[in-house]
Structures are given as C-alpha cells and as structure tokens.
Length: 121
Image (tube, rainbow, N blue to C red; front, side, top):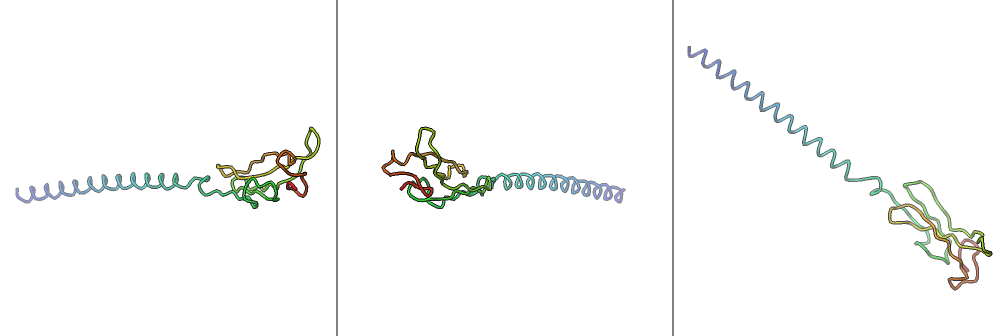
C-alpha cells in the first residue's frame, strides 16, 4: 500500500508540475505578445519620417526645395502666374506632420520688387 501511495504522490507531483509549466508558458507567451504590440506601436511611420526644407522654411528671398520622406516627393519654390496679374512666389515648407505644403506670396505686398529665380527679389 505504501508503494501505491508513493506512486499516487508522484503522479500528483508530475501533474502539478505539468499544470504549472502550461500556466507559465501561457503567461510568458501573453507577455511576449504584449511586448511585441508595444514595440510595434512605439515607432510609427510618422515618428521616423522626416521633412527637410533647404532654405529653412518660409524664407521668401531664398530658393529652396522641400522634401518629405512620407510622400517621397520634393517640391521646389517657384514663381507662378497670379490670376489677377503679375507673379506669385509659391513657397514650400515643412508642416508639423512632416509633409510639404505651400503658401503663395505676392512679393510686391511683402516689400520686394518681384518674383524671379524662384524667390522674391
């Protein structure tokens, strides 16, 4: 009878160890999945994206080129026709969300003579 009792205790110990291993592996797997989700969410595309403007932003007197890695496009400042007559400077710059945008300026209204060579003169 002692041998049967020892065998039953042994089986119980193996069963308890097996259950603990399964619980431990499941818990570890859940933690790894949560960690992977945190890592994946840590560096979004916008976090690693960049935007550069060679003239340093909205600088009317210097021709520049704006590049955004999000769109993989470059835009150069340029003189464009003003529908009301004359020329406008289309000045590109980087927005906070790391894409290029442009504002049109009438050089004459900003203290300059005209737009030429992609800048106010």
